[in-house]
Length: 498
Ligand code: SF4
Image (cartoon, rainbow, N blue to C red; front, side, top):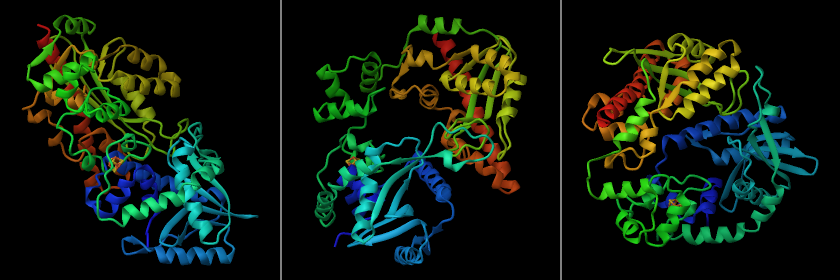
């Protein structure tokens, strides 16, 4: 008999090899921090949506660490028989096919399935397979399905101080897409049966499915035949374009160069420098032109932000970027001492007013401010200016004086092979200073990248004093390194321009 869960079926819909690998080689699954945090957010949003229709009964049950599926199925039956009108995680199984419905709601002519997603996009095509599978299992279990709906966060919702979940969530009727998709289920299930009952790994090559619509956690495993550097690593190469080259056998940098199919300057340089170490490519005049746009005093600014799926602060929408921390290195004049200031909000409070005031205190008007990928810092400052009109004048002055340290790298004025076609500060820094442990993010404790900063900050409010102090220290050290890295990179550009 075929045993399948909803997530396995969805994996199968994306690529049958996902279902096979999940069964036979689960240890090959590697989820990155982004995927893990998306799952956590999904669970939180799912919990919140449960009360969308008022009182409800949730039938989730555990046996140790694992879900107790048979208990959940029995509890669902009991609740339906009892006349409960909203059942969350309502569970069913039919001939080895299992599913739990996020919200099952009683209607006059049957039961409606509500599938909750933490995204703000109601992409029917992507989610229809998921809901069609649920409908198939329910109908074959003798439940009349009266409607199928997608529940997503509404990206137009603005929090006014009281959370209104009726407005936070957007409900879309996806019956038509589900009706189309349900026609494929029998076919998909027989493919699943053939694939999953065979210990032979399915011969399925890389394709566009590897990145869409669900991020596949088996990419590392399935792409291990690729050379160390391949078309998939090229600067700004679209995944679908890379797949096109891959299918044509144009995979390694050697293949691509011999075939003369790449014309982008930066991609060409990336490949040429990767194949033979040519030291550092430098366009002195352009670098000098960039440096001439800067003037003392120079302030190096970097924000850390969080992105709550469910808005917590007045005036914000789902997934708004909320700055909670910054680091600021500054130099008053040529040859002067490098100084440092920083700000880190109290976890659990609205950090925006405090950070906006602190920025105005720490950065004088009309000074040169440097950010790395300035669009991010500029947008955050403009948002703060919109929120606090009394500080807007000063904030917008800061914003208007921000220069972007990314420019010399993104414009191709400075390149070495260790950058590997990436111009993020996390790639540029170790490429320029490979042997300096003080500039190595790996040597930091607890927080090594923005994703970890974003995850740990909201948790600090629940920590005991000792862990709280450790986490705050780690955040401060991480953000400080971001701006110190900018100082070092700027100094390197000065040297390179001479
Ligand atoms: S990486 Fe691609 S080929 Fe491999 S399982 Fe995922 S979607 Fe399928």
